[in-house]
Length: 327
Image 1 (cartoon, one colour):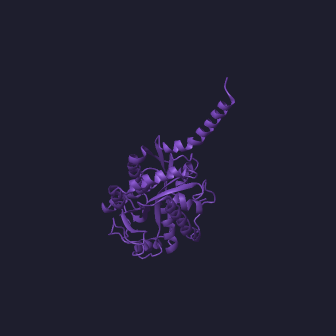
Image 2 (cartoon, helix red, strand yellow):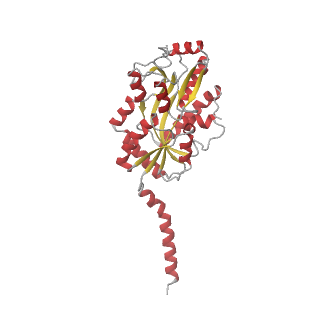
Image 3 (cartoon, helix red, strand yellow):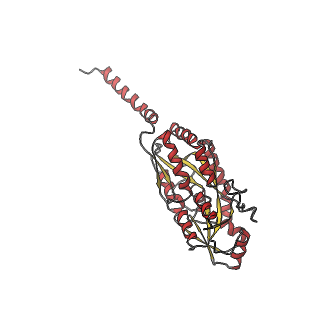
């Protein structure tokens, strides 16, 4: 016969085991591949950051599978991660488009960038480039503005999509100069770059990447300026927009890693530590620098959250002043 004290002991033991299960699960993390969602199609700056980052994370976290989910200026991929289980197995490579511009400029966004995510690290900060097809008879940013004013509505500029950082850069250029240049959104930067090189569009707003720099140096496109406050270490021959005559044209993208809200703190800390180890790799830093990016190897979750909040506060008045609407 089973005694009452044995039943009680069994019950308490079961409760105790259940209470410890999350801790044991976190201690074993990760025990399967981690999914890193890039919310844009392949070929753009997010791939240039996400894929080498994921490769180096394998040494500390095991397999990290990159999954491109493009659409809606990055919002579809971001929403997918926001809805995912907060267990550390779904991460987002987020940036200014899905995490800042879309939530401000759209009347409805299927996630809140602050409440629905746990920021883990800012990996890099990048600038945008203002580039043209070599056949366009302009050599400087001022000449592009003058040409656009002389040919209102006849020029178009391609971007990675409505609500992307390069879209906002183009709209900021239009607002500062009063030019009439038609926006042509693409489902990712790679497609826009291909069409510029092919002559389908005359102007491009794109993140500065190794691909864009190489196309510039090979003469397949012409970079007129970058949207940073100073010249890039990787491309000192290209002036900043301020040097090129438009001091107000300063915009930057950031690319960072975020997890769904309510991801356990020990898992967030583990991903953060693994990220810092990966980002300390001099070879990885050089890859990013050569692509015109500024690595941020020491960012922790608290700093990443503060950075995101500051970017939202910085861009909100600009987006409202130019009347950007994504609906």
